[in-house]
Image (cartoon, rainbow, N blue to C red; front, top):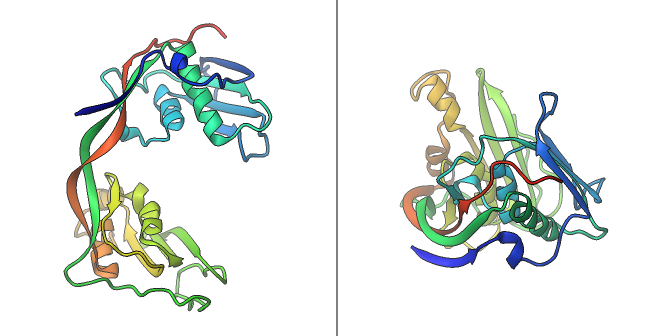
Length: 265
């Protein structure tokens, strides 16, 4: 286990980027969970996150998935409403730094980053070989029955969640898309991070459909109500790709300590 950096008193080691004004307080009974505003939105000078947990704020601030936020104390037991004003020209990177400073200032959060081996999948080409072709630039995508049409021209992709025999299924279709692009689309459906190890560097046309694992568990693996295979089986059967379980090194943020309640605004 290698320590990469120590973030003692988070606010003290970061730049001086802070919100113009930031009010954060425990969520009330009428608070409704939701986030809006911020960079590249219709309200770039305001940022609001109601019913936010510390887990939510840390995940956004460090741009990491929840499984890479480590804490011996639960980070989701309290909820807060954050209302902040941003300086003109604030970028997404600026916003993340402001959230880090807010966590250090208001919650006295101390944390450090380190590398840990975590359960993951390596995506490789199956022994049977890949079952998709390299794209032909400018060639239109033929329609597929029951699938949404792709926009014409260049790279395009679409994800559709639909019902088949009463069970939700996911359909991903893309043109002129890289394998990392495919990994990004399927990542939220896997139960652990997926890392591309196929060695494929071109742009390809993909069509993949599968039943989310949570629905397969609900209806049963062999049930007629489960019309499509899970993600791993679908990748192998439809694309000739395989998910191989591994333990791989990832950078994680370890939360050492924090105050449950923020200091006054």
